[in-house]
Image (cartoon, rainbow, N blue to C red):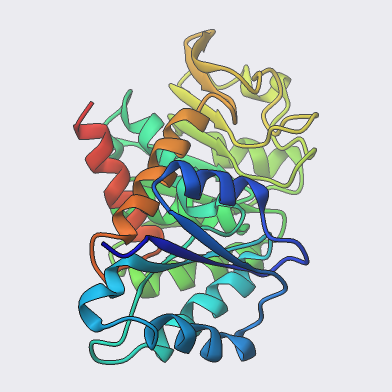
Length: 290
C-alpha cells in the first residue's frame, strides 16, 4: 500500500510546526513541506504530486494549504484546484491561520446551547478571516447575523461577498468603532462572537453586562487582552450572569478534532476540496457522532 503523503504548501517563510504535528497525528506517513509558497509556483508543485502515482493511487497523496495569510492561502488553493484535471488530481484542504477549523468549532459550540436558525448573532471583527467564516456558517444555518467592523463600508463589502455564496443569508451590517455602535449591534442578540486580532479588546465587560439576553459569548483571541473582557481563554461553557462563555482554548478541543478528521478525510479520495463549507459539514458529522 502506498504511503500517505501530505504536501504542505505554507505561505509563510517557515512551514508551520503546528500543522505538521497535527498532520502526523492524523495519519500522514510523510510530509513534504514547502515555505513561502505563492500562486505562481503552485503549478509545478501540483504536477509533482499528480504525475508520480497512478490515478488509482492518488488518494494517498494530498495537499494542505496553510500559513498566516488567509487571502494568499485562498489564492494558492484556487491554483491547486485549477491545476488538477480529469483523473489527475489530489485532494486539498485550506486552513490558513486555522480559520476554517476554528470558525467551525466556534459555531458548533454555540449550536450546542441554542437553535441557530432561531438566533441573532453579533460577530465582532467579522471582516477578518475567522470572522467571515463564522458569519458564513451562522448564515448557512439560518441565523440572523450582525456583521460588525470598525468601518461600515468594510462590513458591507464582506456581507455582499457572503451573499454571493448564500443569497438567502440574513445579514445586517454595523460599524462598531464606538460604544454606541457596539451597543446597537448587541441589542436583541442572543449570541456574540469575538473574532478580532490578537490582543485587541472588542467588547468591554461593562458593556456586555448590560445585555442580559446574551445566552452564549465566544471569544477566539487567546492573547491578552482577550477580545471579550471577562472571558478566560480556557473557559468552556462557563456561566457568567446567565451567559455561557467560551474562550479560545475552550473551543480548541473541537477545533483539533475537526482538523485531524479533515486531514484523515483527504486520504479517502483524490478529488476532495475542503474549504469552509466542507469543513463545517465535517464538524457537524463529528458533533452528531458524539
